[in-house]
Length: 157
Image (tube, rainbow, N blue to C red; front, side, top):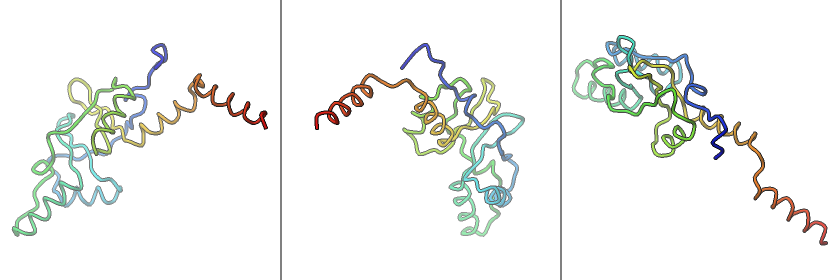
């Protein structure tokens, strides 16, 4: 990798407008909001800080248990995950790619040092950025050699 080249960071590829849920939102309301928007989950924010992630998996668990037990489904805060990966705005593109390679997650919240939500980066955001970078990179010596060898073989016939 060329160390003189400026590397894209989370802050360059993240989505800044993020749909969020709040801990006191009833689970069924949160499910309706997720389904309306076509999202599989959302960050949960309280007092401006990221405190959890609520996903379809969390919702299914909450609703199924509530239905089985005949009890209220509860709130997002009761069922959200509190242990999840986050990245800072300065995480580089390759660090982001590694996170998505090593985990089945689809999105990573981007937070500052005080855990305020700055944005969210998806696997697709990283893939688009990597593809753009790959298209604009200089041709490698190996690729030049391959072209040269193909041309020589074409002239040999």
